[in-house]
View 1 (tube, rainbow, N blue to C red):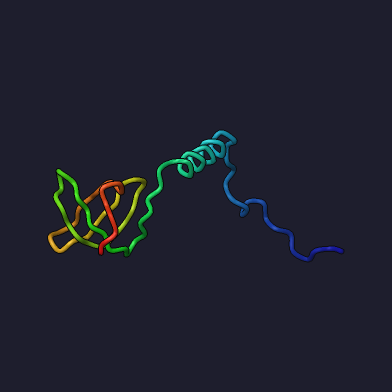
View 2 (spheres, one colour):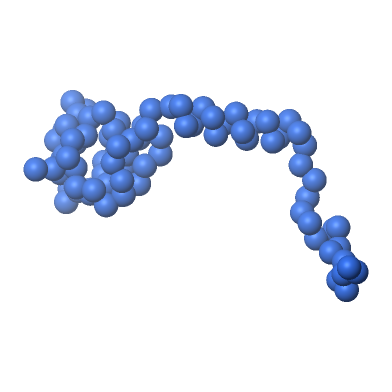
Length: 87
């Protein structure tokens, strides 16, 4: 069967080095094995830390072990190990 349309090879994307692919794959493996945060964006939490103090708020974003908590007094950053679910 003959195709009426042949894809242009220039539109298939940029060439990628093998070392770049290996680096990206290794980064994904390390991220999967690293400590994961059990809280999702929108969860109500209480953060208790000797430096930031105690604040109740909502999880606004997560980046690795760091969690951004939006509280009435402002935005605070906690390690996810210093958080617990709000009662």
